[in-house]
Length: 638
Image 1: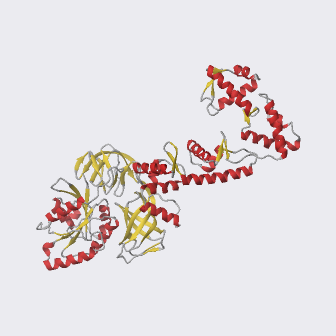
Image 2 (image 1 turned 135 degrees about the horizontal axis):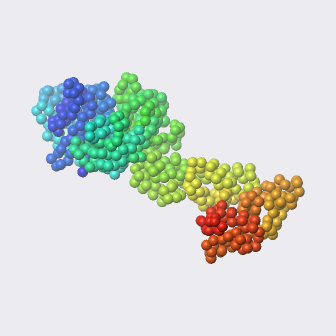
Image 3 (image 1 turned 30 degrees about the vertical axis):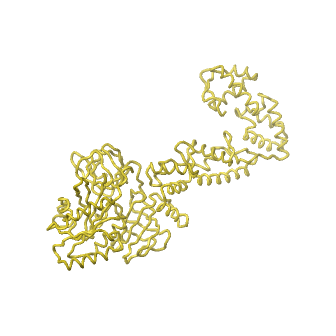
């Protein structure tokens, strides 16, 4: 069933509350002060039942200027506006301001209701109608129904009811599949129910027992009970006036202006990037650095504005801007807001939030403007790709949801599309990176390794952990290794077990170093298992070649030509590979191996057999169990 909220707007004492009572039979003035003064101070709520079973919620908002904050709070979630104009006074200043606010909140459908027609004659009413036609001709109310009513005589009430029912058919149904979000416009304790909050459910649905989050505090709680339009319910949906009883929430822990939402689905921020509009009939302008009063749902605070693609905004103009807020704001991309001039206090404009977690630095270049334009006008896929580029590294779907302000299903569909197009790569299950970000990392990797090779010409490569720290300092090892594999696949780097090098890099020796290299190869390859220790090998060379020996030997270890079993035992790679194969075959027929068995198999001393077995232990190929060794992770990739 479609759930719709109708909101009243208009000048003080133009009969909004009486009109709601005539339509619904409900008096929305609930405060003693409101009844005593005859004006609405806080939003009141009612519901209208139509003959076909459709029910619409009605919000009766204040009209007096000093209560504009509550008017803005009540306007959140409105689908259909009733602009109320008294026949005996016509269009008044607050009438204009309320209509500007409705426009800034992107309310696009409504009805003009002329009240108190019993107080004027037909000639005067004709003049009022002409004035209203001129007043609305450039607004969303152009060509919308204009209904004349009298709440005293009930004249026009049936016609207004019929017009409202017809208008409801043209309103798009809210998406109840989105995560639940309820801006709080009232919060109070009730004995036996705990803390109760009310508001208009603007997105999704919520069920009794659901876990939710109170923002901006971040407190988690569960739904104890629900009401929709004053009646108990197990589930409530977007577009319904809702009362929620929260479990375990202390008095004062949630207040007007807070948001109750599905856990982890709404960002909290003190800076937002927006599309900012200035109303057409203002005499004010917005300049860079101006302070403004900022209204979002039931939340109000001060904001400092930084214009991005203009130096100042005059009437009827718009541009992209960064708003720095004085308080934490729970919000999402696509939310509407209103701004009022700092002093004197009057509505000057509003707009739409484009980025609820913008970059720290305010950029005014062409790329920044295009990024915001994509967030304003682009598809979900456009926004997901642009955000993936901005994240500049490995991300999850949840992280992309957070920075795009897209729900999980939409974000996941966008990733699937972008992955098929090759714009996003899946490195591991649930872990992604944009192709553009990968290319940037590849370029940085080339630079880092080129500098390393220049500084260490005899090293076969940079230690993998060191490269990971330079390129991806905040990335977990499995994700970083997956990215390195992708760089290797793209022929950017060459990987070994411990080191990485540029794909086309090879060590180049001088003539002296080449002779030293050949002598070392001859020694370690002919010695078999009983290779001299490094200090013993060094004694084979004259004093003036000691430094070159050390560099060449380290290079051979780095390249994997010589394998270090311990600080004193080094084998030629061919000998090492042969030994690994022998032990591997032994384990094909035996569950364990002893030191003596390994020594006899190799035909070498206990010293070298022990060094090899301890080396396998260190690589987690084997594990020591008493006096024997068993396979641990085995010989795969060893």
